[in-house]
Amino acid sequence: MDLYEHQARELFKVHGIPVPDAAVVATPREARAAAELLGGRAVVKAQVKTGGRGRAGGVKLAAGPEAAELITRRMLAMHIKGHPVRKVMLARPVDIADEYYVSYVLDRAAGAFVAIASAEGGTEIEETAATRPDAVVRIPVDPAEGVTAAGATEIARAAGLPAEAAGVLQRLWQVMVREDALLVEVNPLAKTTAGRLLALDGKVTLDDNARFRQSRWGAGEGDPHGGPLEAAAAAGGLNYVRLDGQVGVIGNGAGLVMSTLDVVAGCGARPADFLDIGGGASARVMADALALVLSDPQVKSVLVNVFGGITACDAVAEGIVRALESVAVTKPIVVRLDGNSAAKGRAVLDRRAHPLVQQVTTMDGAARKAADLAAAATASDAASGTRADAPADVHSVIHTDLGA
Image (cartoon, rainbow, N blue to C red; front, top):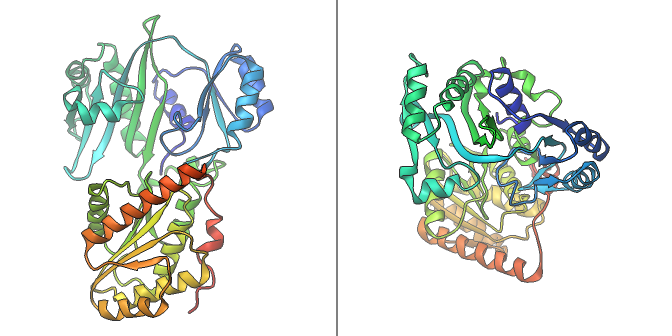
């Protein structure tokens, strides 16, 4: 369960990590009053569970209370990557001398906790990690020992952080352990011109298995799953993670879906989601999955990649046909079926002969076709000035009457 920024800030404050003064509001009038209490000027930040807010216009500096009210009114009408903005946080501005990055994450592949830190924090940390990996240090953390004063000092030294960052690193580890977190991140951890360290932005992901201990974070904050698409997927029992690309991906089995994401990326496209229909999926599950992905406004094409084992390809094809009959399809769908009953499945789709459905026999070929179709649709939208905004009412397209 991802927390909103203001919730992460609350956790930081409880555990002694310094944060700027701030207020969370839900109306423009409340924003004006909050800005007055903060001294006039304020940084207005949309509260959504996704990255890229700054580039999307979800972070603005208000010069005074009137500006804060106007900016808030505009933000509350926004959707950022499909996430509606229902609240904003106003924070007191600070004069920044340096920005750092610090985080702890559970590395499932390594089966260990890892501290990640860099002396070059800020919005371009991903680019820094990709182009200059030596500027970002990764240090394993022994969960039995935790992050001691000596360990925190070593992390700060290795990353080139100021010595006083060691205290923040220790307290951030306490957030990780005591709050059942899988990820805690501060970016940036800023050093002000007055020499004070402040956590200007934070991200916290809690372990869903500890939801019974952390239930307070879902109360009064809308959907705990992070957005309407995630909520619809959770309600339907679909294994879905929304990403930030244009090619919707549906497959059976986590390994196959992960491989499909890699192949799509290798074709120069960005996957829009991870959606695993699982082994033995029925036609109904396939129909729900396709309806969900098609409702995402950022999706320009859909790739269905199924290798039949327990899941029979003809059942998958029947699910696709049911979705085509119940959902207004305006985006191209590329289907690759192989394995159990693949020939029967292909025949089902051939008989339906939908103009927006294409079949490709190989995974590489299907990924290339989906990537090309997404690129063409994106270019067409750019030329016509079309932009993706809010997702469709996914609760009306998923679990519709798709037949028994």
